[in-house]
Image (cartoon, rainbow, N blue to C red; front, side, top):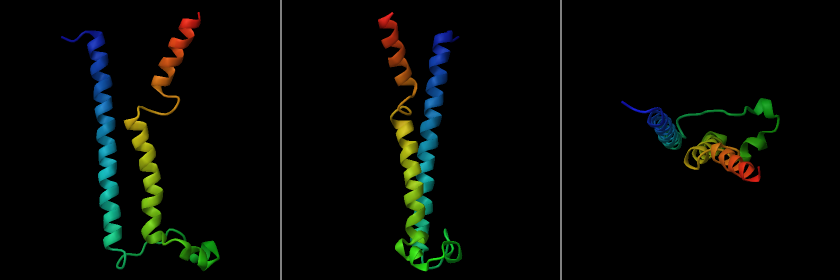
Length: 108
């Protein structure tokens, strides 16, 4: 039977594994979808911004949203997701909180 501390460590490890699994699934879906968009670019049209909505057709020529917009925007989100998972959270995450607690405890 596990002690409370062992159970806590197990739960944290299980949560961490689930986070990593979710990130790796995110990467796999990103690669599959964007590969399909690249392969099917001449046969599949996806309009992110309509000419009528923008008002200037030259804007749509600035970047081919059909091919480059999805990987760029999604890639930024994927990078943020990866940073949070692989580096242990945001700048004010759990490790930062622990460092601040130790710092204030030493000052007292």
